[in-house]
Image 1 (cartoon, rainbow, N blue to C red):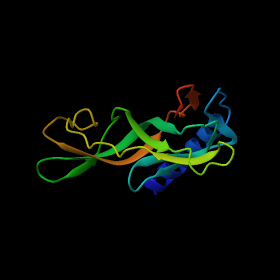
Image 2: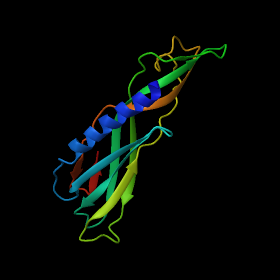
Image 3: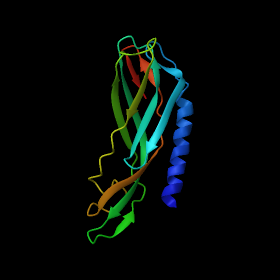
Length: 158
């Protein structure tokens, strides 16, 4: 039940982030009024931002950067597992290109997904008692609202 409640809390937080994301304004490449939808995948530990951008005129590069609190499992040398305590937050990023080909009036849908987190090599940073343990990230709760923006160099960044 603990994982299920954690997933619900994360999804509620991500839904709130989407509300913040739709308030972006920019010149040149920008997010349409429909806003951005954020979806967390708890199986592969990623966050996807999807929406529509306008003002392309030559394509765009879309980037997402999001901070998350990981849920970790620590395993000692005897094979006994225990939850990690207060692991450090991590930041995940992802990038995708959005060509202008096939756009309707300069509008194009996009979807960009963060890379999966790198599993910790320093067990104590992941909340384990010491570095003789091994750590594994089991889940993520995204904590920072990706704030949408765009620039005149045809790049939209969240």
